[in-house]
Image (cartoon, rainbow, N blue to C red; front, side, top):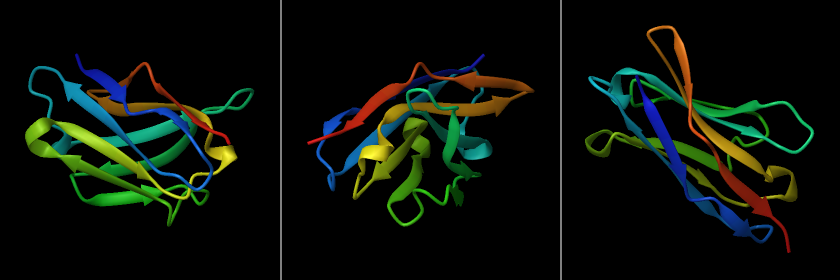
Length: 117
């Protein structure tokens, strides 16, 4: 079993920055050997992939955030991060950490990001 705990969300003005964190734990689980991802779900919309990182270095980004977001990991802390810059109102959403482990999709409870002046 894997537990994912997100943090770092909050209220930020348009153009601002945030760094989200996701701490992963579980017997034998290491982020370095897995694909870890950030998803988001805005009010009234479906959950969508924001970014993913595989084996600690292969990254993938949604077109809507490419160039503004960076996903990274700290293997020693079993933690992944999502650095978001130049935030826009449309980035407002609950951000979820995700991984697929032994065929089970694990999700954190999410952290709310609100971009507003």
